[in-house]
Image (cartoon, rainbow, N blue to C red; front, top):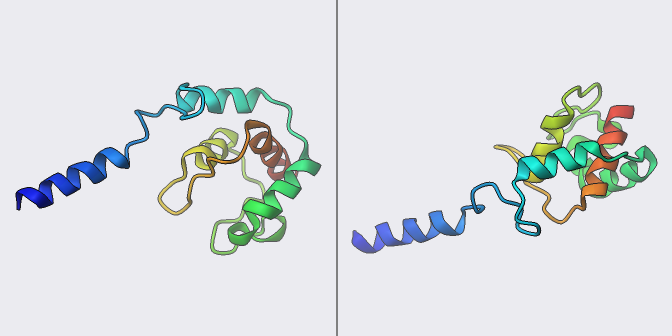
Length: 111
């Protein structure tokens, strides 16, 4: 029983994201989201990033598939935080650059 408790403790520590810190910069993920929201996104570039990373779940043109429709999505902060951190039904996308996320946001806002 003690071994099982240790295993769960190790899993819990390994799954911890450092208290909301971005692993690359050490900045809080809220700081990263604010920085992304301040960038000017390019919807044309965003469509390419969307197609490569988001379309499999959210479908072409954001129409919705296994993930919800993004057409008319009105919460940019929520979208950015979901991409950075994931949520209960969506994985995080830690390999996307800040500009990539800003571009996807611009694309989604254009839908």
